[in-house]
Image (cartoon, rainbow, N blue to C red; front, side, top):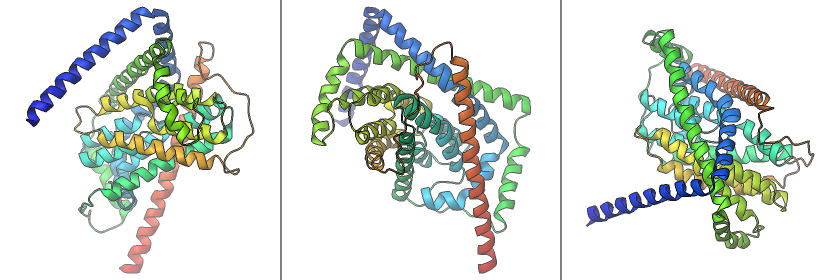
Length: 409
């Protein structure tokens, strides 16, 4: 009976997928101008924001992984990562890259860690649930300044977004079974980390092959991301011109009234349900209090939109990492991030009402090179900051290890 029900369910889903594809193609033929505009907008976002802020780091991450840097961090930061997140020390590299470069770097690096046997599939499922987030550059510059014209709001959104992510990671680690990790032996933790790095160095690929494979894999990943961005930009445009987005908005009016929010926020939430960036732009136009705007933006950043969720799902496909924890994590982070942003927006120390001249977040051809360079350099600064923080954390671990050995030996 159960097998029959599953077969019927699969058939129904297959028919719905086929019907949805036919409807989308028909809509694109009915509204060709809007389809072109949506595709052009998605292409601009991919070319001027995602490529310069992600592509170089895909290459760098692949090289660092093959050079043994991840194994080095794995041994060095195991005493920190295991008690806090119940994850191996190698997960610290994914956290650093995911929190620096934004979507979907966490999924890409988690998949690579599982392929290199640096973490189990169960650990990968938990890791991918809280390392796919917006980059600090996107929150502090594109959202806070470019959309809301309020740089102080960037700090509120960043604190609420990353705090919700870290809390999610800690909760998942606490709820998962604690596995006994085999000890790497006695001795200085720094020496063991260096030995792990040198072991990988002895078996690595030649430099030419390593660089070529890294670029090839990064290009494939960027092309995949670009396809998702463009097709979802077209879907949003079709939903808008067909007025279907208005019907989705009406569903959210009652829940918003129940919590005392402006019902007009429903349009931002409905749009952001599919594409986060467009939803954030709509939320910046609300005639509501700054707390309500912050809460809506915090929810959208946590949810991240079906477009990004589809990217993560596609990247994880075939790896054995199931995305269900990731989906539940989006709901949890959306709710917690919205609540945190609402209360933090009432804190004068975090939220500055000083406004600055806003730049256009829709990038044209005239400032394409400047915008690409701006996002690349900003991402480099954030990567240096996060890696510096990891280095300082590593030094603290080494100092603690020395103290422990002197006291208890």
